[in-house]
Length: 560
Image (cartoon, rainbow, N blue to C red; front, side, top):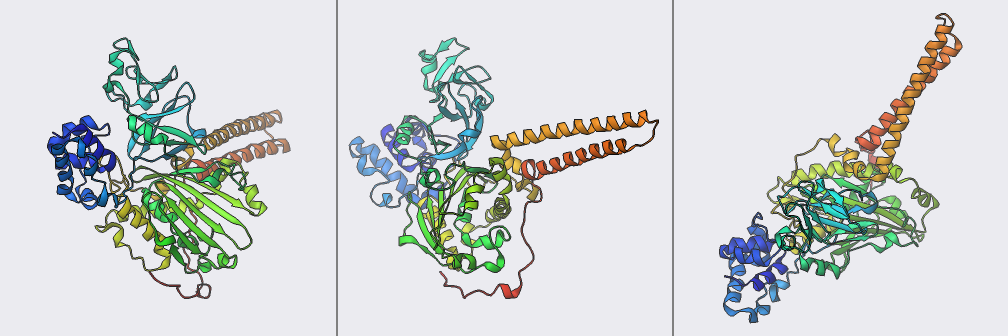
Protein backbone atom coordinates (compact mmCIF):
# COMPACT_ATOMS: atom_id res chain seq x y z
CA UNK A 1 0.00 0.00 0.00
CA UNK A 2 1.33 3.41 -0.92
CA UNK A 3 2.18 5.81 1.84
CA UNK A 4 -0.28 8.66 2.22
CA UNK A 5 2.46 11.27 2.25
CA UNK A 6 3.90 10.03 -1.04
CA UNK A 7 0.52 9.97 -2.72
CA UNK A 8 -0.35 13.42 -1.45
CA UNK A 9 2.97 14.72 -2.80
CA UNK A 10 2.24 13.30 -6.22
CA UNK A 11 -1.26 14.73 -6.27
CA UNK A 12 -0.12 18.19 -5.27
CA UNK A 13 2.17 18.25 -8.30
CA UNK A 14 -0.01 16.64 -10.92
CA UNK A 15 -3.19 18.54 -10.25
CA UNK A 16 -6.16 17.39 -12.30
CA UNK A 17 -4.79 14.28 -14.03
CA UNK A 18 -3.07 12.70 -11.04
CA UNK A 19 -6.06 11.50 -8.98
CA UNK A 20 -7.75 9.66 -11.82
CA UNK A 21 -4.56 8.49 -13.55
CA UNK A 22 -2.92 7.11 -10.42
CA UNK A 23 -6.11 5.21 -9.65
CA UNK A 24 -6.18 3.89 -13.21
CA UNK A 25 -2.59 2.66 -13.25
CA UNK A 26 -2.49 1.37 -9.67
CA UNK A 27 -5.93 0.16 -8.58
CA UNK A 28 -4.63 -0.90 -5.17
CA UNK A 29 -3.63 2.69 -4.47
CA UNK A 30 -7.18 4.03 -4.58
CA UNK A 31 -7.79 3.71 -0.85
CA UNK A 32 -4.48 5.36 0.06
CA UNK A 33 -5.00 8.13 -2.45
CA UNK A 34 -8.52 8.84 -1.27
CA UNK A 35 -7.29 9.14 2.27
CA UNK A 36 -4.38 11.38 1.34
CA UNK A 37 -6.04 13.77 -1.08
CA UNK A 38 -9.04 15.95 -0.34
CA UNK A 39 -9.51 16.46 -4.09
CA UNK A 40 -9.88 12.76 -4.91
CA UNK A 41 -13.10 11.96 -6.73
CA UNK A 42 -13.92 8.39 -7.68
CA UNK A 43 -16.20 9.69 -10.42
CA UNK A 44 -13.22 11.07 -12.38
CA UNK A 45 -12.37 9.23 -15.54
CA UNK A 46 -8.74 8.69 -16.39
CA UNK A 47 -7.78 10.64 -19.48
CA UNK A 48 -5.04 8.18 -20.41
CA UNK A 49 -3.86 9.88 -23.60
CA UNK A 50 -3.41 13.18 -21.83
CA UNK A 51 -1.42 11.55 -19.00
CA UNK A 52 0.66 9.49 -21.39
CA UNK A 53 1.64 12.56 -23.39
CA UNK A 54 2.58 14.66 -20.37
CA UNK A 55 4.05 12.11 -17.97
CA UNK A 56 5.23 9.20 -20.09
CA UNK A 57 2.40 6.71 -19.60
CA UNK A 58 1.63 3.95 -17.13
CA UNK A 59 5.17 2.71 -16.52
CA UNK A 60 6.51 6.20 -15.94
CA UNK A 61 3.78 6.88 -13.41
CA UNK A 62 3.87 3.54 -11.65
CA UNK A 63 7.64 3.26 -11.28
CA UNK A 64 8.34 6.25 -9.02
CA UNK A 65 5.32 5.44 -6.87
CA UNK A 66 6.41 1.85 -6.43
CA UNK A 67 9.95 2.96 -5.64
CA UNK A 68 8.60 5.39 -3.07
CA UNK A 69 6.76 2.55 -1.37
CA UNK A 70 9.89 0.43 -1.14
CA UNK A 71 12.35 3.11 -0.11
CA UNK A 72 10.21 5.01 2.36
CA UNK A 73 9.72 8.65 3.03
CA UNK A 74 13.45 9.42 3.11
CA UNK A 75 13.69 9.33 -0.68
CA UNK A 76 10.39 11.01 -1.49
CA UNK A 77 11.93 14.28 -2.63
CA UNK A 78 14.19 12.64 -5.21
CA UNK A 79 11.31 10.57 -6.54
CA UNK A 80 8.96 13.49 -7.17
CA UNK A 81 7.62 12.75 -10.68
CA UNK A 82 7.70 16.46 -11.49
CA UNK A 83 11.41 16.84 -10.69
CA UNK A 84 14.31 16.97 -13.18
CA UNK A 85 13.10 16.15 -16.70
CA UNK A 86 9.43 16.11 -15.77
CA UNK A 87 9.67 19.55 -14.20
CA UNK A 88 11.06 20.85 -17.49
CA UNK A 89 7.65 20.27 -19.02
CA UNK A 90 6.52 23.32 -17.06
CA UNK A 91 2.88 22.19 -16.83
CA UNK A 92 0.20 24.76 -16.00
CA UNK A 93 -1.90 23.94 -12.90
CA UNK A 94 -5.51 24.82 -13.71
CA UNK A 95 -6.98 24.55 -10.22
CA UNK A 96 -4.22 26.49 -8.46
CA UNK A 97 -5.33 29.82 -9.92
CA UNK A 98 -7.70 32.70 -9.21
CA UNK A 99 -10.69 33.14 -11.53
CA UNK A 100 -13.20 36.03 -11.61
CA UNK A 101 -16.80 34.82 -11.50
CA UNK A 102 -18.94 37.97 -11.16
CA UNK A 103 -18.98 41.67 -10.39
CA UNK A 104 -19.61 42.08 -6.68
CA UNK A 105 -22.15 44.82 -7.42
CA UNK A 106 -24.19 42.28 -9.41
CA UNK A 107 -24.20 39.61 -6.69
CA UNK A 108 -27.15 39.10 -4.38
CA UNK A 109 -25.96 39.64 -0.81
CA UNK A 110 -29.31 38.51 0.61
CA UNK A 111 -29.47 34.96 -0.69
CA UNK A 112 -27.19 32.19 -2.00
CA UNK A 113 -26.75 32.08 -5.78
CA UNK A 114 -25.45 29.25 -7.99
CA UNK A 115 -22.33 29.66 -10.11
CA UNK A 116 -20.09 27.31 -12.07
CA UNK A 117 -16.30 27.34 -12.42
CA UNK A 118 -14.17 24.72 -14.20
CA UNK A 119 -17.30 22.54 -14.30
CA UNK A 120 -17.66 22.71 -10.50
CA UNK A 121 -21.18 23.64 -9.39
CA UNK A 122 -20.80 26.22 -6.64
CA UNK A 123 -22.92 28.40 -4.41
CA UNK A 124 -21.80 31.97 -3.68
CA UNK A 125 -23.01 33.86 -0.62
CA UNK A 126 -22.10 36.63 1.81
CA UNK A 127 -21.69 35.95 5.52
CA UNK A 128 -22.64 38.15 8.45
CA UNK A 129 -19.29 39.96 8.38
CA UNK A 130 -19.62 40.95 4.73
CA UNK A 131 -17.17 38.32 3.47
CA UNK A 132 -18.01 36.30 0.39
CA UNK A 133 -17.97 32.54 0.55
CA UNK A 134 -18.04 29.84 -2.12
CA UNK A 135 -18.93 26.20 -1.50
CA UNK A 136 -19.69 23.24 -3.68
CA UNK A 137 -23.40 23.36 -4.39
CA UNK A 138 -24.34 20.28 -2.39
CA UNK A 139 -24.91 19.73 1.30
CA UNK A 140 -22.70 17.00 2.83
CA UNK A 141 -25.77 15.61 4.62
CA UNK A 142 -27.70 14.27 1.60
CA UNK A 143 -26.28 16.28 -1.32
CA UNK A 144 -29.17 18.75 -1.58
CA UNK A 145 -28.33 21.98 -3.50
CA UNK A 146 -27.15 24.66 -1.07
CA UNK A 147 -28.04 27.34 -3.63
CA UNK A 148 -31.68 26.62 -2.75
CA UNK A 149 -30.91 27.53 0.84
CA UNK A 150 -30.77 30.86 2.66
CA UNK A 151 -28.58 33.07 4.82
CA UNK A 152 -29.34 32.28 8.46
CA UNK A 153 -27.60 34.34 11.13
CA UNK A 154 -24.78 35.15 8.73
CA UNK A 155 -24.30 31.48 7.85
CA UNK A 156 -25.19 29.42 4.78
CA UNK A 157 -28.18 27.25 5.70
CA UNK A 158 -29.45 24.26 3.74
CA UNK A 159 -33.21 24.49 3.23
CA UNK A 160 -33.62 20.71 3.26
CA UNK A 161 -32.72 19.99 6.89
CA UNK A 162 -31.35 23.27 8.25
CA UNK A 163 -27.67 22.42 8.49
CA UNK A 164 -25.56 25.62 8.68
CA UNK A 165 -22.03 26.30 7.44
CA UNK A 166 -19.46 29.07 7.64
CA UNK A 167 -17.54 30.29 4.58
CA UNK A 168 -14.78 27.71 5.14
CA UNK A 169 -17.33 24.90 5.08
CA UNK A 170 -17.37 24.09 8.80
CA UNK A 171 -20.70 22.73 10.03
CA UNK A 172 -22.07 25.03 12.75
CA UNK A 173 -25.54 23.60 13.34
CA UNK A 174 -27.01 20.10 12.97
CA UNK A 175 -30.70 20.47 13.98
CA UNK A 176 -31.54 16.77 13.70
CA UNK A 177 -29.08 15.83 16.44
CA UNK A 178 -29.34 19.12 18.33
CA UNK A 179 -25.58 19.57 18.00
CA UNK A 180 -23.50 22.68 17.36
CA UNK A 181 -20.04 23.65 16.08
CA UNK A 182 -17.90 22.20 18.90
CA UNK A 183 -19.65 18.83 18.98
CA UNK A 184 -17.94 15.86 17.27
CA UNK A 185 -21.03 15.44 15.10
CA UNK A 186 -20.27 18.84 13.53
CA UNK A 187 -16.47 18.69 13.60
CA UNK A 188 -16.41 15.39 11.73
CA UNK A 189 -14.81 15.93 8.29
CA UNK A 190 -17.84 14.36 6.64
CA UNK A 191 -20.02 17.15 8.02
CA UNK A 192 -18.02 19.85 6.23
CA UNK A 193 -19.14 21.50 3.02
CA UNK A 194 -16.45 21.69 0.37
CA UNK A 195 -15.41 25.36 0.48
CA UNK A 196 -13.20 27.40 -1.84
CA UNK A 197 -11.04 30.47 -1.09
CA UNK A 198 -12.40 33.79 -2.35
CA UNK A 199 -11.27 37.39 -2.58
CA UNK A 200 -12.48 40.67 -4.07
CA UNK A 201 -10.21 42.56 -6.49
CA UNK A 202 -11.05 45.29 -9.03
CA UNK A 203 -14.71 44.99 -8.06
CA UNK A 204 -14.81 41.30 -9.04
CA UNK A 205 -15.28 38.20 -6.90
CA UNK A 206 -12.43 35.77 -7.54
CA UNK A 207 -12.53 32.09 -6.61
CA UNK A 208 -9.69 29.58 -6.18
CA UNK A 209 -11.20 26.25 -7.37
CA UNK A 210 -9.45 23.96 -4.89
CA UNK A 211 -10.55 23.17 -1.36
CA UNK A 212 -8.86 21.83 1.75
CA UNK A 213 -6.28 23.41 4.09
CA UNK A 214 -3.53 23.49 1.47
CA UNK A 215 -5.75 25.44 -0.91
CA UNK A 216 -6.34 28.21 1.65
CA UNK A 217 -2.61 28.48 2.27
CA UNK A 218 -1.58 28.41 -1.39
CA UNK A 219 -4.25 30.91 -2.42
CA UNK A 220 -3.14 33.34 0.29
CA UNK A 221 0.34 33.68 -1.20
CA UNK A 222 -0.68 33.99 -4.86
CA UNK A 223 -2.41 37.09 -6.23
CA UNK A 224 -4.92 37.13 -9.10
CA UNK A 225 -3.46 37.99 -12.52
CA UNK A 226 -4.84 41.52 -12.65
CA UNK A 227 -4.62 44.25 -15.28
CA UNK A 228 -3.39 47.25 -13.21
CA UNK A 229 -4.39 49.87 -15.80
CA UNK A 230 -8.04 48.87 -15.37
CA UNK A 231 -8.23 50.74 -12.07
CA UNK A 232 -5.41 53.27 -12.52
CA UNK A 233 -6.99 56.76 -12.25
CA UNK A 234 -4.46 58.19 -14.71
CA UNK A 235 -6.24 56.22 -17.46
CA UNK A 236 -9.52 57.52 -18.87
CA UNK A 237 -12.35 55.08 -18.14
CA UNK A 238 -10.66 53.46 -15.16
CA UNK A 239 -13.62 54.36 -12.93
CA UNK A 240 -16.07 52.40 -15.08
CA UNK A 241 -17.08 48.83 -14.31
CA UNK A 242 -16.26 45.95 -16.66
CA UNK A 243 -18.99 44.66 -18.94
CA UNK A 244 -19.63 40.96 -18.34
CA UNK A 245 -21.21 38.44 -20.69
CA UNK A 246 -21.76 34.69 -20.60
CA UNK A 247 -21.03 33.12 -23.98
CA UNK A 248 -22.00 29.79 -25.49
CA UNK A 249 -18.58 28.78 -26.79
CA UNK A 250 -15.56 27.20 -25.15
CA UNK A 251 -12.92 29.25 -23.34
CA UNK A 252 -10.29 28.34 -25.93
CA UNK A 253 -12.43 29.78 -28.75
CA UNK A 254 -12.62 33.16 -27.07
CA UNK A 255 -8.88 33.19 -26.38
CA UNK A 256 -8.23 32.44 -30.05
CA UNK A 257 -10.60 35.21 -31.05
CA UNK A 258 -8.86 37.89 -28.99
CA UNK A 259 -5.47 36.76 -30.32
CA UNK A 260 -6.74 37.40 -33.86
CA UNK A 261 -7.07 41.12 -34.68
CA UNK A 262 -7.20 40.46 -38.43
CA UNK A 263 -10.87 39.44 -38.26
CA UNK A 264 -12.00 42.92 -37.15
CA UNK A 265 -12.36 44.48 -40.61
CA UNK A 266 -14.31 41.48 -41.86
CA UNK A 267 -16.55 40.21 -39.11
CA UNK A 268 -17.05 43.67 -37.57
CA UNK A 269 -17.46 45.39 -40.93
CA UNK A 270 -19.41 48.62 -40.57
CA UNK A 271 -18.85 48.62 -36.82
CA UNK A 272 -15.14 48.95 -35.99
CA UNK A 273 -13.75 48.34 -39.45
CA UNK A 274 -14.45 47.87 -43.15
CA UNK A 275 -13.58 45.16 -45.63
CA UNK A 276 -12.07 47.64 -48.05
CA UNK A 277 -9.85 49.10 -45.28
CA UNK A 278 -8.15 45.79 -44.47
CA UNK A 279 -4.39 45.23 -44.70
CA UNK A 280 -2.20 42.11 -44.34
CA UNK A 281 -0.87 41.90 -40.81
CA UNK A 282 2.72 41.72 -39.56
CA UNK A 283 3.02 39.71 -36.32
CA UNK A 284 5.82 38.30 -34.21
CA UNK A 285 6.11 36.33 -30.98
CA UNK A 286 8.07 38.45 -28.47
CA UNK A 287 11.38 36.75 -27.54
CA UNK A 288 9.99 33.61 -29.18
CA UNK A 289 8.88 32.67 -25.64
CA UNK A 290 5.83 30.79 -24.41
CA UNK A 291 5.73 30.18 -20.67
CA UNK A 292 3.30 27.96 -18.75
CA UNK A 293 2.49 30.59 -16.12
CA UNK A 294 3.47 33.86 -17.82
CA UNK A 295 1.90 33.09 -21.18
CA UNK A 296 3.23 35.04 -24.16
CA UNK A 297 3.22 38.41 -25.95
CA UNK A 298 2.64 39.20 -29.61
CA UNK A 299 3.66 42.42 -31.36
CA UNK A 300 1.86 43.57 -34.50
CA UNK A 301 1.30 46.64 -36.63
CA UNK A 302 -1.97 48.02 -37.94
CA UNK A 303 -4.39 45.74 -39.74
CA UNK A 304 -6.14 48.52 -41.65
CA UNK A 305 -5.14 51.46 -43.83
CA UNK A 306 -6.63 53.79 -41.23
CA UNK A 307 -4.50 52.30 -38.44
CA UNK A 308 -1.39 52.37 -40.59
CA UNK A 309 -1.96 56.06 -41.22
CA UNK A 310 -2.20 56.60 -37.44
CA UNK A 311 1.06 54.76 -36.85
CA UNK A 312 -0.48 52.00 -34.72
CA UNK A 313 1.81 49.62 -32.85
CA UNK A 314 0.02 46.82 -31.05
CA UNK A 315 0.95 44.35 -28.31
CA UNK A 316 -1.26 41.44 -27.29
CA UNK A 317 -0.53 39.68 -24.00
CA UNK A 318 -2.02 36.45 -22.67
CA UNK A 319 -1.39 35.70 -18.99
CA UNK A 320 -2.91 32.37 -17.89
CA UNK A 321 -5.44 31.43 -16.91
CA UNK A 322 -7.77 34.21 -18.02
CA UNK A 323 -6.08 37.59 -18.52
CA UNK A 324 -5.79 39.16 -21.98
CA UNK A 325 -4.70 42.68 -22.87
CA UNK A 326 -4.21 44.35 -26.21
CA UNK A 327 -2.52 47.71 -26.21
CA UNK A 328 -2.56 50.07 -29.20
CA UNK A 329 -0.04 52.93 -29.24
CA UNK A 330 -0.51 55.62 -31.90
CA UNK A 331 2.02 58.07 -33.27
CA UNK A 332 0.15 61.07 -31.78
CA UNK A 333 0.61 59.75 -28.20
CA UNK A 334 -2.82 58.22 -27.83
CA UNK A 335 -2.94 54.78 -26.15
CA UNK A 336 -5.93 52.42 -26.12
CA UNK A 337 -5.80 49.48 -23.73
CA UNK A 338 -8.40 46.72 -23.95
CA UNK A 339 -8.52 44.30 -21.04
CA UNK A 340 -10.51 41.08 -20.80
CA UNK A 341 -10.76 38.33 -18.21
CA UNK A 342 -12.08 35.05 -19.66
CA UNK A 343 -13.40 32.54 -17.12
CA UNK A 344 -14.06 28.91 -18.15
CA UNK A 345 -17.37 28.05 -16.47
CA UNK A 346 -18.15 24.68 -18.04
CA UNK A 347 -17.58 22.99 -21.41
CA UNK A 348 -19.08 25.28 -24.04
CA UNK A 349 -19.75 28.15 -21.61
CA UNK A 350 -17.39 31.08 -20.95
CA UNK A 351 -17.79 34.34 -19.06
CA UNK A 352 -15.91 37.50 -20.05
CA UNK A 353 -15.25 40.78 -18.23
CA UNK A 354 -14.31 43.52 -20.71
CA UNK A 355 -13.06 47.05 -20.17
CA UNK A 356 -11.31 49.70 -22.25
CA UNK A 357 -9.15 52.51 -20.86
CA UNK A 358 -7.20 55.23 -22.67
CA UNK A 359 -4.41 57.76 -22.44
CA UNK A 360 -4.56 61.04 -24.38
CA UNK A 361 -7.83 59.94 -25.93
CA UNK A 362 -10.32 62.25 -27.73
CA UNK A 363 -12.83 63.88 -25.41
CA UNK A 364 -15.67 61.93 -27.05
CA UNK A 365 -14.24 58.66 -25.66
CA UNK A 366 -14.12 60.11 -22.14
CA UNK A 367 -17.76 61.19 -22.43
CA UNK A 368 -18.77 57.80 -23.80
CA UNK A 369 -17.43 56.03 -20.72
CA UNK A 370 -19.70 58.19 -18.54
CA UNK A 371 -22.91 56.94 -20.14
CA UNK A 372 -25.25 54.77 -18.01
CA UNK A 373 -24.08 51.18 -17.67
CA UNK A 374 -27.28 49.71 -19.09
CA UNK A 375 -26.86 51.89 -22.19
CA UNK A 376 -23.26 50.80 -22.75
CA UNK A 377 -24.13 47.16 -22.12
CA UNK A 378 -26.86 47.02 -24.71
CA UNK A 379 -25.90 49.50 -27.41
CA UNK A 380 -22.23 48.58 -27.62
CA UNK A 381 -22.91 44.87 -28.00
CA UNK A 382 -22.88 44.45 -31.77
CA UNK A 383 -19.28 43.20 -31.90
CA UNK A 384 -20.08 40.63 -29.22
CA UNK A 385 -23.12 39.51 -31.22
CA UNK A 386 -20.98 38.93 -34.30
CA UNK A 387 -18.27 37.06 -32.39
CA UNK A 388 -20.85 34.96 -30.55
CA UNK A 389 -22.47 33.65 -33.74
CA UNK A 390 -19.15 32.77 -35.37
CA UNK A 391 -17.54 31.17 -32.33
CA UNK A 392 -20.58 29.09 -31.39
CA UNK A 393 -20.66 27.54 -34.85
CA UNK A 394 -16.87 27.17 -35.02
CA UNK A 395 -16.78 25.48 -31.60
CA UNK A 396 -19.26 22.79 -32.64
CA UNK A 397 -17.46 22.21 -35.95
CA UNK A 398 -14.08 21.90 -34.20
CA UNK A 399 -15.32 19.15 -31.85
CA UNK A 400 -16.17 17.00 -34.88
CA UNK A 401 -12.61 17.17 -36.26
CA UNK A 402 -10.44 14.14 -35.34
CA UNK A 403 -7.32 16.33 -35.49
CA UNK A 404 -9.02 19.11 -33.55
CA UNK A 405 -7.25 22.46 -34.11
CA UNK A 406 -4.55 20.83 -36.23
CA UNK A 407 -7.12 20.71 -39.00
CA UNK A 408 -6.70 24.52 -39.25
CA UNK A 409 -4.78 25.91 -42.21
CA UNK A 410 -2.69 28.79 -40.80
CA UNK A 411 -0.34 30.08 -43.53
CA UNK A 412 0.07 33.79 -42.72
CA UNK A 413 1.63 36.04 -40.12
CA UNK A 414 -1.87 37.02 -39.02
CA UNK A 415 -2.21 33.49 -37.58
CA UNK A 416 0.90 33.61 -35.41
CA UNK A 417 -0.88 34.60 -32.21
CA UNK A 418 -3.44 31.81 -32.66
CA UNK A 419 -0.57 29.36 -33.15
CA UNK A 420 1.17 30.69 -30.04
CA UNK A 421 -1.97 30.19 -27.99
CA UNK A 422 -2.45 26.67 -29.34
CA UNK A 423 1.17 25.86 -28.51
CA UNK A 424 0.66 27.10 -24.97
CA UNK A 425 -2.50 25.04 -24.50
CA UNK A 426 -1.01 21.90 -26.09
CA UNK A 427 2.52 21.97 -24.66
CA UNK A 428 2.08 23.79 -21.35
CA UNK A 429 -1.47 23.12 -20.19
CA UNK A 430 -2.38 19.55 -21.10
CA UNK A 431 -4.17 20.30 -24.37
CA UNK A 432 -7.47 21.29 -22.78
CA UNK A 433 -8.96 23.29 -19.94
CA UNK A 434 -8.53 21.42 -16.66
CA UNK A 435 -12.21 20.69 -16.24
CA UNK A 436 -13.11 18.97 -12.97
CA UNK A 437 -15.11 15.75 -12.90
CA UNK A 438 -13.62 14.11 -15.99
CA UNK A 439 -15.25 16.54 -18.45
CA UNK A 440 -13.57 17.75 -21.65
CA UNK A 441 -14.24 20.65 -23.98
CA UNK A 442 -15.94 18.19 -26.33
CA UNK A 443 -18.81 17.86 -23.86
CA UNK A 444 -20.72 20.74 -25.43
CA UNK A 445 -24.36 21.51 -24.70
CA UNK A 446 -26.73 21.21 -27.65
CA UNK A 447 -26.13 23.62 -30.51
CA UNK A 448 -28.28 26.75 -30.34
CA UNK A 449 -30.10 28.69 -33.02
CA UNK A 450 -28.78 32.13 -33.93
CA UNK A 451 -31.66 33.72 -32.03
CA UNK A 452 -30.75 31.75 -28.93
CA UNK A 453 -27.05 32.63 -29.24
CA UNK A 454 -27.95 36.32 -29.51
CA UNK A 455 -30.34 36.33 -26.56
CA UNK A 456 -28.99 39.19 -24.47
CA UNK A 457 -31.06 38.42 -21.40
CA UNK A 458 -29.46 34.99 -21.02
CA UNK A 459 -26.05 36.30 -22.00
CA UNK A 460 -25.99 39.34 -19.77
CA UNK A 461 -29.20 40.99 -18.57
CA UNK A 462 -30.33 38.46 -15.97
CA UNK A 463 -26.97 38.74 -14.18
CA UNK A 464 -26.66 42.55 -14.34
CA UNK A 465 -28.24 44.68 -11.61
CA UNK A 466 -28.27 47.79 -13.82
CA UNK A 467 -29.96 46.08 -16.75
CA UNK A 468 -32.52 44.39 -14.51
CA UNK A 469 -33.34 47.78 -13.02
CA UNK A 470 -33.67 49.29 -16.50
CA UNK A 471 -36.05 46.50 -17.58
CA UNK A 472 -38.11 47.01 -14.40
CA UNK A 473 -38.33 50.75 -15.09
CA UNK A 474 -39.40 50.17 -18.71
CA UNK A 475 -42.12 47.76 -17.53
CA UNK A 476 -43.40 50.36 -15.10
CA UNK A 477 -43.48 53.04 -17.82
CA UNK A 478 -45.33 50.65 -20.16
CA UNK A 479 -47.88 49.93 -17.43
CA UNK A 480 -48.34 53.68 -16.91
CA UNK A 481 -48.82 54.23 -20.64
CA UNK A 482 -51.45 51.48 -20.75
CA UNK A 483 -53.39 53.08 -17.90
CA UNK A 484 -53.09 56.57 -19.43
CA UNK A 485 -54.17 55.33 -22.85
CA UNK A 486 -57.20 53.64 -21.31
CA UNK A 487 -58.01 56.90 -19.52
CA UNK A 488 -58.01 58.85 -22.77
CA UNK A 489 -60.26 56.23 -24.37
CA UNK A 490 -62.77 56.48 -21.50
CA UNK A 491 -62.61 60.26 -21.70
CA UNK A 492 -63.30 60.13 -25.44
CA UNK A 493 -66.35 57.94 -24.85
CA UNK A 494 -67.58 60.28 -22.13
CA UNK A 495 -67.15 63.35 -24.40
CA UNK A 496 -69.01 61.62 -27.22
CA UNK A 497 -71.87 60.70 -24.88
CA UNK A 498 -72.13 64.31 -23.69
CA UNK A 499 -72.61 65.50 -27.26
CA UNK A 500 -75.23 62.89 -28.10
CA UNK A 501 -72.82 60.59 -30.03
CA UNK A 502 -71.38 63.43 -32.07
CA UNK A 503 -67.60 63.26 -32.65
CA UNK A 504 -66.10 66.56 -31.61
CA UNK A 505 -62.58 67.96 -31.88
CA UNK A 506 -62.11 67.11 -28.23
CA UNK A 507 -63.02 63.51 -28.92
CA UNK A 508 -60.54 63.29 -31.77
CA UNK A 509 -57.77 64.79 -29.64
CA UNK A 510 -58.47 62.33 -26.82
CA UNK A 511 -58.49 59.37 -29.20
CA UNK A 512 -55.28 60.58 -30.82
CA UNK A 513 -53.59 60.94 -27.44
CA UNK A 514 -54.68 57.46 -26.39
CA UNK A 515 -53.47 55.99 -29.68
CA UNK A 516 -50.12 57.79 -29.43
CA UNK A 517 -49.57 56.38 -25.96
CA UNK A 518 -50.29 52.86 -27.23
CA UNK A 519 -47.78 53.36 -30.07
CA UNK A 520 -45.19 54.55 -27.55
CA UNK A 521 -45.96 51.54 -25.36
CA UNK A 522 -45.38 49.20 -28.31
CA UNK A 523 -42.13 50.98 -29.17
CA UNK A 524 -40.90 50.43 -25.62
CA UNK A 525 -41.85 46.75 -25.86
CA UNK A 526 -39.80 46.37 -29.04
CA UNK A 527 -36.92 48.30 -27.50
CA UNK A 528 -37.03 46.02 -24.48
CA UNK A 529 -37.13 42.96 -26.72
CA UNK A 530 -34.28 44.13 -28.94
CA UNK A 531 -31.79 45.37 -26.38
CA UNK A 532 -32.55 43.68 -23.06
CA UNK A 533 -34.50 40.43 -23.09
CA UNK A 534 -34.17 39.17 -26.68
CA UNK A 535 -31.87 39.15 -29.68
CA UNK A 536 -33.38 41.89 -31.82
CA UNK A 537 -32.04 43.24 -35.14
CA UNK A 538 -28.55 43.89 -33.79
CA UNK A 539 -26.45 41.38 -35.73
CA UNK A 540 -25.00 43.72 -38.33
CA UNK A 541 -22.89 41.58 -40.67
CA UNK A 542 -22.59 43.05 -44.17
CA UNK A 543 -22.81 40.24 -46.66
CA UNK A 544 -22.36 42.21 -49.87
CA UNK A 545 -18.76 42.15 -51.12
CA UNK A 546 -16.82 45.43 -51.43
CA UNK A 547 -15.94 46.78 -54.85
CA UNK A 548 -12.84 45.31 -56.46
CA UNK A 549 -11.15 48.71 -56.60
CA UNK A 550 -11.42 49.00 -52.82
CA UNK A 551 -9.76 45.68 -52.07
CA UNK A 552 -6.36 46.33 -53.66
CA UNK A 553 -3.86 46.07 -50.80
CA UNK A 554 -0.07 45.67 -50.55
CA UNK A 555 1.36 42.14 -50.94
CA UNK A 556 1.29 39.84 -47.93
CA UNK A 557 4.27 40.67 -45.68
CA UNK A 558 5.25 37.03 -45.36
CA UNK A 559 4.12 33.55 -44.41
CA UNK A 560 4.89 31.38 -41.41
